[in-house]
Image 1: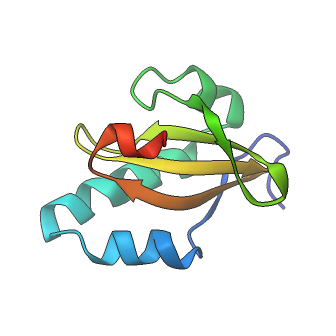
Image 2: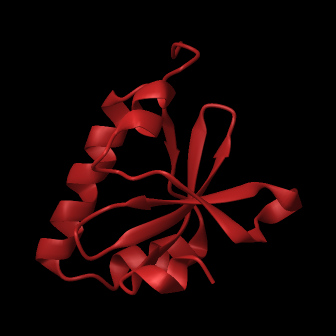
Length: 102
């Protein structure tokens, strides 16, 4: 049973999967390195991590009005995510950082 602050990953969104599968081998490896990092962190560590840069997206809301966030996956890719209890739900990947906010 996971501890209450442990981050659990939800990678099942079809848009996220399409984005992930369209990446090249090197980019995919870097994305998976970040996913492994996230899996080891607590939620409080995710919010504090300067490399991930957890940021609120103020311009839109997710499913059911959930707040949306972006995190830095690589130096070139950000992910659009939402938090649902212990889960970080990945919604999409963005090579153009600005597109993650609009």
